[in-house]
Length: 335
Image: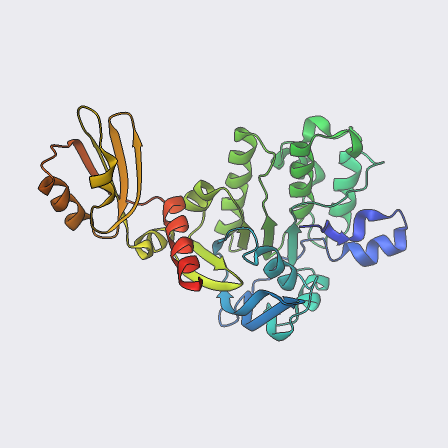
């Protein structure tokens, strides 16, 4: 997503312009939304670019304390959805509300922090100076030393931003987005470029934020993160909300199960591919892995072939497999 964490706020050294624009970047107050008011509300929102409908009639609400994963293949509308939420783009039709107000009002009012996927940072300052600037702009700032430690960048506080690796830049963006208390944190591919330990530390912090009643919305391609972290998963496809539920509910929605077994001798794939309710098959050595929309019927037919599978296992799909199955089924409908 070609926007900076602070929108364009940190791109110039003009102090006055800096402060006016940086308000769009800074996560601020701890005031909680009323229980009856969704943190985020999309009401029949659509957004097009020429003939391409990036978001198509999107309706959803997010609530205090939720950790929500936004999933979808490339071009599904994830980045545009986040842009609309942050007021970076305006809907063609429908309405977006953040804490009951327009996105800009909520952001300028200091209730939203964002860590966006890419974009420039002030590169002639040190990491510590940049984080201090973000902290100084918060009405409810955290101590700079705590922000640096939480992001795992204390040891590079004196390093110029233009000397950072990609993973280090991501952690700096994380620090900027969490430099003060806030009610909503929006994250676009937040752990891209981070190593395993940095990712674990990042999500531990996000859990803490959600436990304190804050809402966390993140878009990711790491579906194992969504499975482990999110208590709600949204699946977008061609700008539409295809699925909305817990990870377990999304897996169940796929309606398929995994079947794995071993066969002796050379494996003839043709009769296996003719099994009923088969949705996919993979043969590796003596091991066969298939997906079926009716596992009982498939296994019954398997034994009807006169085969004697060993180490037979039947299990539900993982989130990644369910995601692929759901989006593939939707794609097939549209063809």
